Length: 508
Image 1: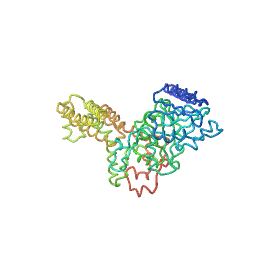
Image 2: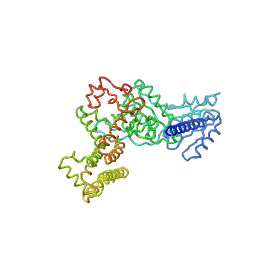
Image 3: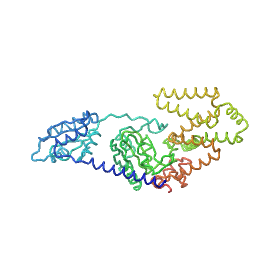
Image 4: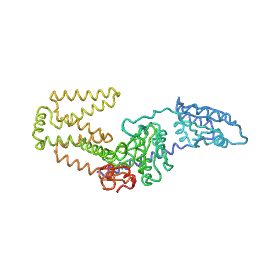
């Protein structure tokens, strides 16, 4: 039965890929040599959209047209660097329309970004990316001129990755600005930006960023292969690509694709042989391959002194275990093994359990759901009001529930400690939020042995996971003693710089 469903899914995926390829071929229609036909096709394709601007002009005594999208170009640059030069260009004798287009390109226009276009599909994409399209009558080729000038959010510090030291810059939604921030930090001619396109409808620009001499060609080609199979209609966020980039059939709670809004973090990963994926319209960069241990590393670790960075890293490891295991262990021990608690503590726990109307497991689950509701409300409401809801809601609901005897004070304290610990490692909040609920259920039903069994399954899942041939648990499993200098501890930069590690050199 399982084999039947697998074959069915494989046939469905092959059919979708075939339809995607056919759709790509249909859109590759060449431009006509008639200006009238070309303009009619543009008008019909955009269905007389209000932001489509077509301006017929005469260039070198030949009928031509300039096509732009309203709001996507810089009007001053367009007027001074495009319209004025081509309108007042001196006529050349005995030139065909194609030769006139080349003459305009090579001798009249001073803008560096000029692209020859031969298909309607490429023309549509470039126009909607802020290019001006120059078409001559009698020429089956057009010239796309870069005059982008759309508005975008100014560069600011990312709210999801707040650091005490280091850069205060974060990525923005405009992909070209993000590329500039990376190039400014890595002044290496081997740093390469490679553009691809995703989304049958949105035609979203995505960019692969890597250093050619360091990156693994095998990983790079495999990544391009996976991205080419993305058959989504719209790609509106970087996270849309994650299921296609991860290994097929990956059932882990933890993602092997990293996220970052900080250009300094992305540059550090690129220097280690990783590939950063930037998606136009989103300030988040994807990083592949990504290791589990990197969830506990931040740029502050490398800006602090080694002994303090080591201490904070241990606190992150401890916080992960508390955020994941503590509620489940508390429920399992209080229900099945209360004798492990000290006498004074067990008496208070027993008193609180006896004074509440719900079983301990249900009580813990209810508190967690209430906390998640308050957290979600705090995130979705306007920022000043959101903070007020989170703080007042936590204080009022918690204090009132304890005084009313609906929940016990020890349980509330365990949940509060778990919630605080989960914010120490914000990149792991989603998996830990689900895992701790599962551990609560297992601890309340199977006790401490069930918690330990589930934890063993979780460790096996992490150690067996890989992406692009790189073990997810590396360098712990398989073990690499030399890499422990940046895992268990964070040694000084003098030691770290002696032998630079790349992702390809991790133990397999």
